[in-house]
Length: 149
Image (cartoon, rainbow, N blue to C red; front, side, top):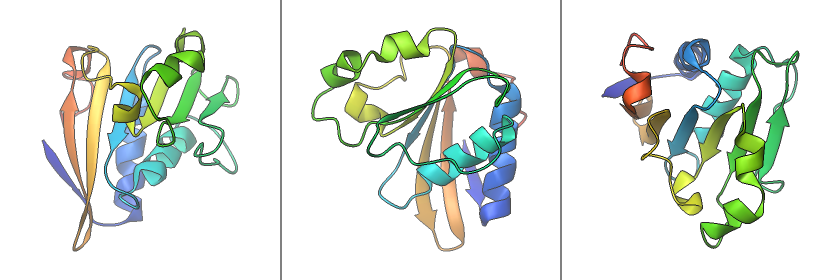
């Protein structure tokens, strides 16, 4: 499915729709080139989950953790861009962080990918003339959870 996101308010609405359906164990796998809007969408999701204030990009820390009551459910925001090989995600203890939490993964292919998981919502973002285009593919657990899917 292709969704046109012509401006920031559209990206924020899309983020709210995802956040409203997000459950522990889910993965939001965000891919796309540099500047495609991955972190912008991640920030919209995190804000919609209840986080107030700055949402730092996890580019250098790799993992940022958000816990209730600051957000509706435990969440890990990861940016795997700097990983040289997928095994490094395991070395970071990603599985431990994910237990009972949802995961927003930027550059998921650098961590070996998550598309095989039924709770994965894969979103490829592309720059378009008027904003962004999101190419969305939901795993079996996402069918029917977001109206646009």
